[in-house]
Length: 288
Image (cartoon, rainbow, N blue to C red):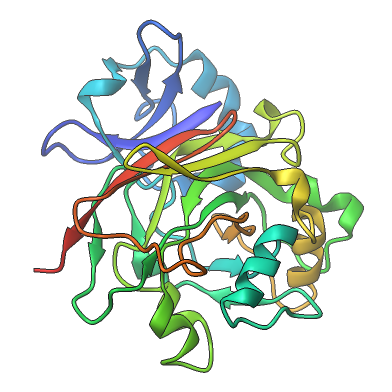
């Protein structure tokens, strides 16, 4: 299943099932099927219970091109990212002056940074070092603690595309942690929808790609992770309880702007896509 939050014009947000046909992609309103729930995070613990109703739903159907897609999970309790988790990226980060960690290196993205899949990315006036990072986003589906690596896939609800937008000078120079440089408003576009785990045969064999104004900047595969997504879940869950809707950004491949200074500028259009999950696209705008 592909589950989204959407609205028509100024209408209230609803949950929807995305049906991709190749000729006329549509979204089905699931309001009746899920009892009026509008938070995907709140519905995740009952996803299996609702599955049959979601698949059978005959609610209002709209062309996907006519709706506004919201962030699939707009209210997570945690949004975490792992740094330098692709081999080539770790080396380019080192060249940019970022030390390579000996263990999994996690940081927090404040949840207020979450943005729509096609929302504008605001370039802050206080920086000219706005960077991009395509990443596989993992969404936790059930409350869990001390998860074994071999059991980790069972706690995953699904996947989405993330762009871990970063303000590099605030990331490396203005704070002793990554949190500030990773958490500017609008710097967490995610989506375009949640693709449930059963739709993806192997999340460690997906091609990921990012372009800026059509120019390819990143083009890699998820099998190059240093710590795979199951190791990440096992590591984090030793520390704290993972909750339904928590988002894990699992690392970015080589090709970021920092090593060359090729940062994002106002007017740039950034497109991040992952095989089987779709694409998000965001225009960079000036802070008002």
